[in-house]
Length: 134
Image (cartoon, rainbow, N blue to C red; front, side, top):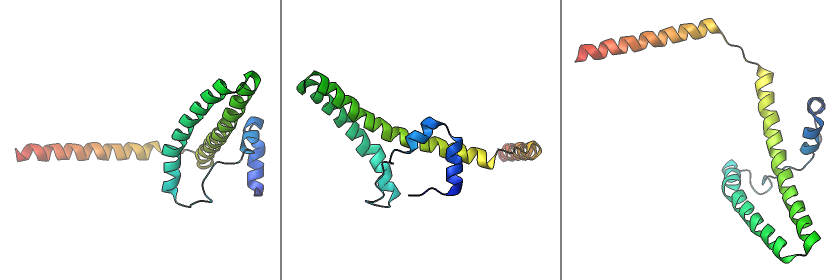
C-alpha cells in the first residue's frame, strides 16, 4: 500500500513515535466483509470477549510455564495487543486533528447573535400565544 505524496508530507510533520506506531498493521476485518455494522459488533462484542480470554490466558501462562518463559510470553502477547490498539487510537487522533485544523474554525459572532435574538423572539411569541389560550 503506497502512500500518496500529500500523506507522505503529513507523516513527516507528525512525531516519530506516531510514525512508528502507524507502521503497525491495522486490525480490521475488511477482507471478511465490507459491512460497517459488523465492524461495530467486532469492536463492541468480539474484542472485549477476546480481552477477557487474554486475561485468562495470561493467568494460565503464569501458572503453567516456568519463570522466565511465563513473563516473556505475557509481555509479548500483551505488547502486540497494545500495539494494535495504539495504532487505531493514533490514527483516530490524527484524523480528528486533521479534520479540525484543515477546515479551521470561523465563528461569525454577528450571525450567531442574530440567530439567538430570533430564537428569543420566537420563544416570547410562543409564550404570549400560550397565555392567550388559557
